Each structure stands twice: as C-alpha cells, then as structure tokens.
Length: 417
Image (spheres, rainbow, N blue to C red):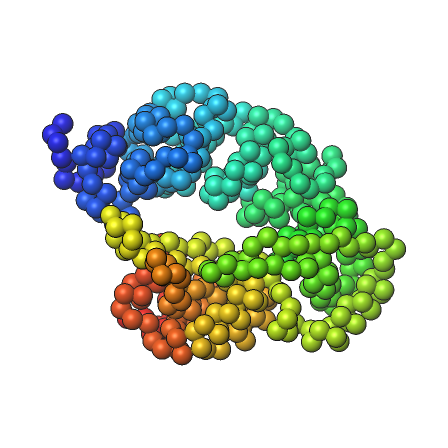
C-alpha cells in the first residue's frame, strides 16, 4: 500500500481501517457521515481511559470487517464498549457472519452483540445498553445473556422479588431500562401498564433511590386508582421530590451537581392524608414553581452536542449544546441572555418543551451564545441570542449540525441563518 490513500474504500473495509490506524488516511479526507469516521477518531485519539490498547481495538475492528457490512462501523462508541468486554466474549469476532437481513448500523451492531455475548435470550429493551453506552446496564445485559437473574445483576439498585424479576423481562421493547425495572415492580404488585406509563413520564430518580419508601408509594398508587383518574399522581411526586431533595448546585453549563437528599417515611399514610399534605404544600409554595424552589424534570431523549472548531488547536473554542433540566439553570439562562426563557419552567416540567443552551468554552471561561427551544415533536421552534437577537451564521451552522445528527426538524419560521 502506498503512503497515502485518497478516500475510504467502502468495499474494502480492512484496507480503510489499516490506513486510518497507520495515519495514511486523514479523518479530514472522509466524507460527511462516513461509516469510518467514528472508529477512525477513536483510533487516532488518546487512550488513557479506554479499555485495552489502541492496537487491540484496531485488530478487533479488522476481525469484524466484512465487505458488505461496513455500516457496523457507524457505531464507534458501541464497538469500543464491546471491545472493552472482551473477557465475556463467547466466540472469536473473526467468526462473525451477520445473520440479519438489514444492513443498517443498528441491526449489525445488535447482530454482533448477539454473536459475542448472548447464550440466552435477552429482552429487546436491554439492547439500549449498547446504544446509551451505560457501563452499569451493559453489565446487566451480559448478566442476563449468560442466563443469570436480573435480581443478582452487579450494581442492582432496585428491590425485586422473583415475580418482579419475571415481569421485568416482559416489559415492552420501547421501554428504557430503568422504566422496565419500575414496570416489573408495578405489574407484580397488581398495577397496570397505564400506571407505569404515567410514572415513566415523571421525575422519579430521587424517589426511586429510596426503595423502601418507593415501594410503599407504589402500593398506595395501586390501592387508590382514583389518584390516577384525577391526575393527583404528578402532584404527589412533585411534593415528595420537594421534600426529599434538600439542595444542589449547577455548573457553568446548567448541569445539576450532587444533591443532598433526606428520607421520607410513608408509614401509615393514606391517600387522603397524603393529599392533605400536598394541598398544604401547594398553598404555601405557589404550586408549580417559585423562585427559591429547585424543580427538576425528565430530560428529552436527545443527546447533547460537543464541537471543537479547530481540532488541531487545543486553544480553539469548544462549543456545547446542553439540555437544561432544572429550574435554577433555566432561571440563570434567562438572566444571562436577557430574555424570557425563565418563564418556561412549567412547560419543561410537563414535557411539552425542552430548553438547550449553546455555549463556547475558551481559556477566558464559558460564554452563552444561544438558547434553543425544542418541542415534544422533536422540532426546533425557537433560537435566540442575547436580548432575543437572531443567531449569526457560525452559531446557526452548529445548531444545524446538531439537528442533523439528532434528526431534529427545524420549523420554517425558526430564523436560522
């Protein structure tokens, strides 16, 4: 092979991977959204906090290279996670021959995971572990794939009876893994899918952490179906979150740091007595939101975005689009940008909209550039700079790149350059 090749050869993936690994093919020579870009970036990057070694990862990629199945390389981070679990492989990756009829990156990734790890059938929703690259959930996946019970999975934080563990495996394919745990608990305790769907839309992380209190709360909801009928469940969850979370700090990007929590005792509580407490709290705290109260909500299922304008210059700005998922961050965004986004807390809490902040980080600190509103139909409906100014050309390009990667639509009336 010559010292340089001009472009990726889709029909000869091993040749392309070798050229990327040996730096005979530059990342800048790859076409936009090339299936080799992510794995190329990983092979060229630092390897301090990654599993194994760079050469081992390259050899793994070469072992799974198939002429007609090169789209598997689109899943760069997932392939790195698969390589990191090599001690659990059931077979050598050299013997992999895709059985799937689909030639998409996701289908090929699942086929490869099945080949390397799965001895026993795993619920479809568990494959999200390889999509989210969550080490905890990946450990659970492998545990199940080896025929073990989810109750004994490493790091399991949910209390599961034998019946709950069985119901967990029956959770619908579109569930996220944590919601499937709740599904198992609800169904085993006599609840239904409607209650699970209702709860999955609410911010429950802090309540779920205290399993003793959480299971009592679930039983109260199941024993009193009128709470769901009259939309009382979200009010109770808001009240208990307020009681459980004592405080927290947000960083320069609006992300919530560690929070202090306290135990809540629901022993002896009835639906009526709990609703009286909720009503008293609402009356004294201006139900919904007030300036001194931290309110958090479930994030929209869209990824944050990071971009460095000049990768060769470590001093060049780092641009981030980060979702704001708490009331303190929304308030601060409105103050920093001098517009009315601070009034959007209720819309974010209800799931009707999500708010994102585009920032630039340099040696001088973090600068807010744009505030972005995305509705629940995954459409960007508003983008504003300081004092409601229109976005400039460069900032608009970053928003469009993010939108394309996340498959977000952009409303016609959204004034991006």
